[in-house]
Structures are given as C-alpha cells and as structure tokens.
Image (cartoon, rainbow, N blue to C red):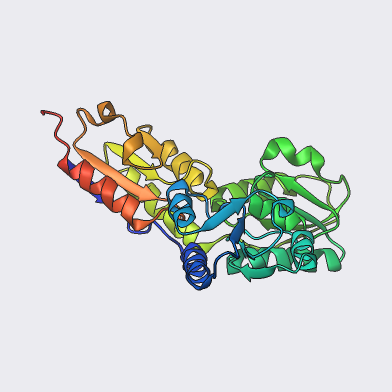
Length: 283
C-alpha cells in the first residue's frame, strides 16, 4: 500500500520539552524519593506507560503526594495547586508548555485590566482548568450552545485554548460579536504548531483513500485533527497505534494518509507506516 505522511505531525516543541524534562528528572532521581506527575505528562498512553516503567508515578490530585519530586505536566496547573505543593515542601519541576503559560498570563492581565475573562475551549481539559484557576471569575465556552453563559452587558477579554482551530475561533468570535457586550478584547493564543499540523492534515486527507490520525484518544489536539480530516474525508480514523487498526478498513484502498497529534511519538508513527506499507489485501 502506498502511504503518505503529513509534512507536519508528531511531537511539538512543548511536548518534546516535557518528555526531555521528565527523562532528565528521572535520571537524576535518587531512590527512595519518588517522582510524581500531577496528571498524565502528555495525553498519550504509550508515552506515559514508558515513563512509568522508568519510575514516573502519575497521580490525579495533590493529596496523593507526600514527599519527593513533582513534575508539572505540559498542560500546566492552577496557581492554587502550586501553592499546595510548595506548602508540602515538595521539589517542583515545571514542564508547562511556554504557550500554555502565556495563556495563563494573558488571562490574568485581562482580568487586571477590568475584563471578564472568556476562554474558548473544552471546560474539562487540564489546560483550560489551569487557565481558569489563574483568574477570580472566568467563563468557558466550547461552542455556540454555551454563549448563554456570557454576561449580557459585559466587558469581555477573550483567549482560546491553544489547540483549537482557527476556523472554530473565528466562528465563535463571530457568534460572540452578535451579543450585547460593551467592549471586546481578543488575544490570539492559538498554538502555531497546532495550526500547521491542522493545515498539513487537511491538505493530505483530500489526496488519499483512507486517512489515519494517530494519537491519544484524550488528546485535544489529536481529536481536533481527526474532526477536521473527517470533514474533508469520511474515511478518517483516529487510532492510538497499529494494534487498534481493523485491517478490514484497508481492503480496496490504494493510498493511505497518516498524520499524528502533537503528543504522538515518532516510533508510533514509524511502526504504523511500516505495517501499512507492508499490507497487501490480496494476502
């Protein structure tokens, strides 16, 4: 089978930094002091499992950590969580993506300037939760169905979850703009690396018979890639790795496209491509 790989795919600089930081901390750790990560360091189970094999313990809450080193994952955390970690005397290593930190800082600045902070994104995503933890009052809007949450006569300061698409940001700003706000200030906080991956994936999926988007099922940027590709090629499938593929999907297909989320390692992509190239539906 002929396989085409998106020009832009796989690890972004923020994820690469988080993984490198985790590996460095683990290499320097002295047993029996444990190394924890507050939530999965990135949204990719294959990577999390590999790091767990070298000693990284992933926990869901600050209460689960009593001693040792704590790694702050790429999605960041709210200031209150950092304060609680410091109060326990824990060593903190910050692997938050610099772009996520920027969203947090922008949200704080907007609130200091008197704006009511609005973030366009997924309310339960850790990046969004971390940003909202940086302001006293904030509103999260995922789509047009959430616009009723906005104040009817507000002075709104708007930011966006870094992995949203430019099209979605534009649609939401258009919908918000029809409301009764007094003043609107928008700061573009989209990740350029995520946007490049989206553009590359859309261009590729229109040239192939079947499109595969590789990455964690909980990864927001990977889900976004899959949704965008599905809009242009109905034969689009979001998988974590080769083991999840139903080979029947490949029957009758001549050209396959492959892209991957920003938290998907190269070895997952390479393995998937190698198996695809070797596939022969004639047995």
